[in-house]
Image (tube, rainbow over the protein chains, first blue to last red):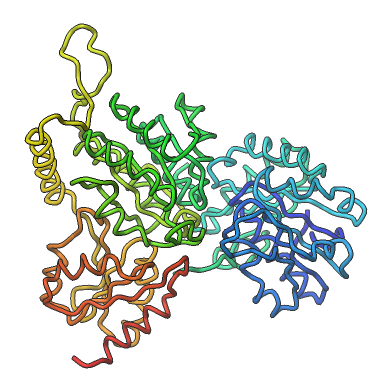
Length: 221
Length: 353
């Protein structure tokens, strides 16, 4: 179990954040980078979402830069060019100083990008975590989440190191909502034979014993 | 589980399944793809069919066929794909068939872009297909309302025997909010005694058709249809009023733009500007009467849309030149910010009377 996201990320050169789409991977990846930066560590976020062109790490490039965090962004992110492209400085994930946090696209489709350079991830040293949200319809049931988890492992050629519990209801999240998700995350961890590494809660609904995170989702209104 | 965290696209799909719809015919397009994916994953689980057709045109004609049997059926697309469907939609209107059509709009014209827009307003409310006819157009402004209005869309389509469109955009389709499906109301529905389900040798066969040999016969069906539109307008017009009681400046906005405008209205009030928001929920039928009444109280209207000014004309017609109506919009996939709308309100309030 890790107490903070930075503690989690310090375990390996590369932290890969993967899981079902809409589970909150971008939120976790960006918050992890911010936590590392706050400790004075050099780190970068790689936006590897080749699946869905909206709500991605690239949205936070400016904010992250203000905290000294570099974002590796696919050239056409947030334009009308809807193609599955990788950042041109993709290799910095393996060769850059300090830590790399990879924000991978949703589901097994999103994890395909990992499979392509599986050896590089293994050689550089990486830990992959599965983001779970009890309140997402298609993966709410731990058994369904497990199926997704195994599918991602098959496609990426990498094994998960643990579960990050990000159970939330967006703006309506309360500490009670976060608490409600814990037993389901524990069940998923037991089914997968993996540790439930950490549970996160938004700052406004902080649940003691969890790691507080900022909501960094792009605000439209 | 009471509430779930969903994308708007997913909420429409789940709401359709919960409304008893077991048939989805579509063709993938950004930014509505999650809807098709959700259908593909979940329709088989409940004995339904989710079919990726060879094109949008094929999909809408499958909808025509399915609707002829009285089955609840849905198709979804985004702007360019809706244009392709328009011929089929006209046939469905002409055949008096119920169905639900989802448009998760993106920037246009042409292939345009993949970012959110509301530039299909005129197409949806005025001329989705050739001929005299209309479809019901519902404009949700939240993921919760996308679920509620999808259920409502099936009921309205069945009651008035006409297509009903969920008029969304890329932002609503992609953003995530909590949804409670149990909060969706249930209505009483007429029997579908017109459907082609086999006579069993016990009745005269039903005919679903949009071709008429005699112009007078065709005219009669069109006139009868317009009588139904009148009833629809009388009974089903929906809108929301926000901070309008003492308002001097009324923002008129629907969908995601209404959410943005709401923030602008709250901030304008903090600055001492008496602003309010009128949000049409049905774009067809358009809430003309309440807007006309509103014109007696306010000084000016600000119509805000993600287009160059399409609803603007409906607002002008509704208020019968009683008060000036000014348009503000961004287009091409650019979303206006609450600050930009506030700036417009400040301009209105500071300008000459």
